[in-house]
Image (cartoon, rainbow, N blue to C red; front, side, top):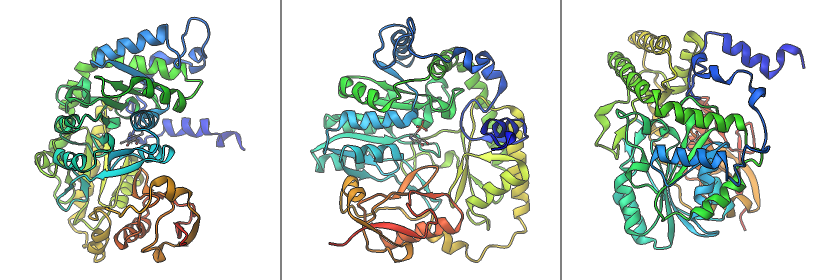
Length: 485
Ligand SMILES: Cc1ncc(COP(=O)(O)O)c(C=O)c1O
């Protein structure tokens, strides 16, 4: 390898360029926020005398996590150095017994599916609403959760994602009430809502709305290192000892002190200056959104959807820009923003792009985003409508993926399998996950029937150049299906 090809050199070169991040981590590479860390080697230690042990905390880490719990109003707060992924894995495995049943929203992150695989779970899905014809997932309805719980008394826990990647918040209080009526713990994957507890203009955190276990990625929307997250527990419906057991399994046995100090620093900062900064950040978002409402062709996901399609609230820090009827698809808009404006988005789907903003953003960055989108929008005036556009949308964003579950995820993944061309896979049972990443929500999970609509979705995502992952065949031409008996 040549000297300048090393990852560190690439990172430094990129960091010095004019590319601006509208993606995580939430510190946005803002030098003002990381000044205290200096040379990372200086503070990178292991479990030496006086520095406690995350897997058996009885000293400074125990005190630190107890202090954090008091900030959040939780009974227990755990520092996670393996992201929300390990929190979701521990929460699912800790609340549902091996071979047991969980009620999960279909838009869960792949960590939840991995937990279902590891512990051979039987999964019942509750589907989010779909917002009009936008191809964007709305909220989960409490009555849907209630109905499924009523029909399936064996369910041991409920897991939902709120907010979604796109900032859609469900009626968590209503869902918690429904779960509690049946004596089941509610786990909320609030990976994208770690900023909620610190900003009164933002949606209320699930922890204050009755959820029993709440997982938040500090690194996504707050100034904290990538991989840092927290898990909170409140009340006595979730078995704390089991949750802790699984955290010890899923977390590294050498948790980084840099990360743990970063978690504590982040919460410390947010509980003080952060609360005022969130107010300023909210006002700058209002200005940004007001400007973007002036777009004539591109559309902003905005407050008008609140109260419909299960959308209980919206996180205004997620800038979701829709491309319907513009002749562009989400990947195209993302490419223009990257190549022409050097603005890197968090993700795109067929129908929209998502920019993550945070209090780490500088006003110069928000201005660049507004100017770029308004300019692209003005240019769209004269663009001819793509004649294929309707057929794209027919299958991609608008399809609500409701596969038929034929076997558990474990059975599907471990069955005898064979590859078939994706185009010939209709009617077969999938032996692998297929998802676009981000957001990592499966289009198909192992053990599910490959319905025509799902196969079309996969093919169209591939044609659009979206990052379709999970297939063993990296060319994306074949899919592993369960062998017929
Ligand atoms: C909804 C959701 N949950 C969990 C995760 C995993 O979080 P982490 O990257 O902190 O492990 C993600 C990651 O994107 C996510 O979108």
